[in-house]
Length: 287
Image 1 (tube, rainbow, N blue to C red):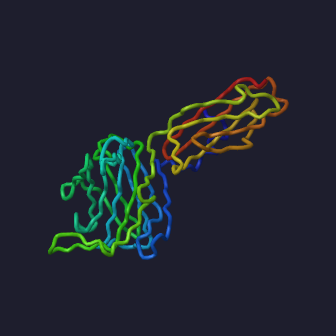
Image 2 (cartoon, rainbow, N blue to C red):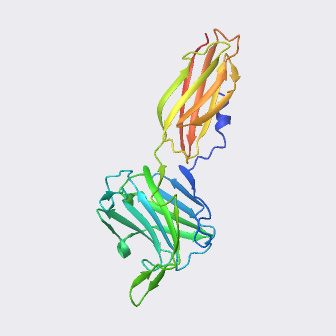
Image 3 (cartoon, rainbow, N blue to C red):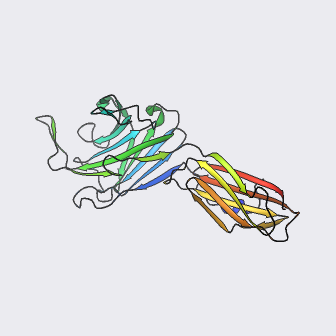
């Protein structure tokens, strides 16, 4: 059973799907679309992207939105451009002239070709108050559940289509790319897993600091993580002096009471992210 005090510390944590928020640079082009944030969340079989473009509150015919995906985090698969392997397996496309306003296609890329068009798998999509929401069934990405993936987003405005010549005109196009041209964000939807757990010292000592460390995967810096911990010494609850999470490792440090030698202790540390939580404990007799 988790030591008293731990439940109170983890109470109120969001236990929804794994989620991460990515912020883009603002105001690169005063006249162009301006991506503010991209929020990615994952359930057992779905991926959701929420792309916020506050200065484009309404989706219009001249806009195009594309999300590039390296769905398997493998640079050796997917699209090859000018002999260079990009690892990009798919893209999601919103394009009035390609698919119809408000519709999204999931295109597949292999070698030098990305295919889809009217035959592309349809993706649930909505656009309201400057935010586009995409819901992707991961089975369409060739996966049973979300894992680790790379992605980028681009939003264009000013796209013109000449119906007579059947061609696009990009003369007055404005563009915003997030995070930046040629760069990608990484989202890790894998369940939390313990890589290492340790106590320092191995057994708590009276009058000395006692530290618990729990290293976990994934360690996505954009994915919110909460750390909870407690130490009970001879029936007395000792709260942590410091508690934090950095570079994939949670750390809690306690001050063991000076007169605690010979008493039983139990220390507990927990890391939570979305619906996932891992917990480890160390118990013994204070020296």
